[in-house]
Length: 404
Image 1 (cartoon, rainbow, N blue to C red):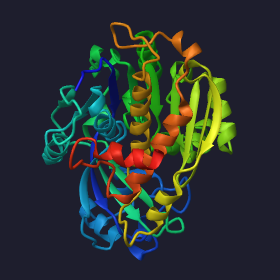
Image 2 (cartoon, rainbow, N blue to C red; image 1 turned 90 degrees about the vertical axis):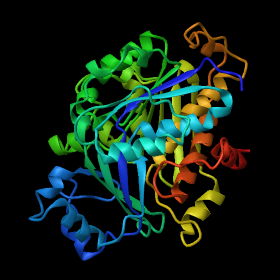
Image 3 (cartoon, rainbow, N blue to C red; image 1 turned 30 degrees about the vertical axis):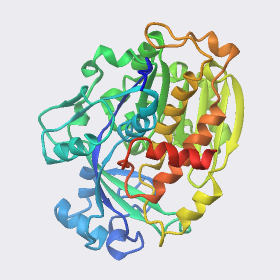
């Protein structure tokens, strides 16, 4: 395999996903802890709640509370989770044959969860020499999945413990992070001190010549502070330094304080983002761009009907929607690298493309979205977001079988 000079560096919250794949949000135990409104404490389908907040509703400990919510169900799986980390695992798998380096920059604690995460990651091509271990609890998430929710498409809720990532800040990010072809920022709302400095970090990555990609996550911290206001992306104004922003529908509307995805996308472009992608679960993905690496484009991409059928047929295709968005983000980033290697572009010594080249040969955002939509759908017929390949190239072959 010829070594490629291209590099993806990703920053975000890596954690252990403890997955309950077959609970009912309508059960009495779950109902006791379910939020009665968007402003009330409790868990909600599709959203994230912090463990410390949920415990304020209980007179028991976390273990007893989870037993009530899940009805005593056994854990279905332990998996690697977290924005950026799940995305980067898939990117590394898809780019193995292309020789592209994919590296994760993040923190873990020094506990059993950290050991379990690293043992799973050792089975992937992802580079981990910038994944630091520090004293404390590793971030973790209890994933509650109800496969019958949303007319059989399924939905999940997350109970999150930030652990050591609560104190992870911009000063701990090595300079080498910015020396990349593509810098990916995944779910920084789960890293409060990183999120507060997102503008500074994106600006530095852009100045170094990297393509900047931001994937959002449900911002429960902002929602709790200002439930009637738009979240924004931290206290700064990072939008002019974002080449591509990727959100799901709820996140897009909440960040922008708008009421539909076209209005939200327009708002992001007005703020300075060069391109926007909005996913909508089983519905079509919307994308638009007004310049930069992707030129001018807009459109809708439907996930393949054959995959949508398999997702609905849960008896033969068990799984949940956990990590679908993260797989979408990872596959899209990988596809952009594939496009950069198709012979149209000259790279400098830092494995970056002079942006002037995109004026003549813009990257195809539509192609990347079609590719990513298949990866997101495939993630729905497995438990958890991280898939360990039986052999190198397995997931790439599966995606290509649907993309053509």
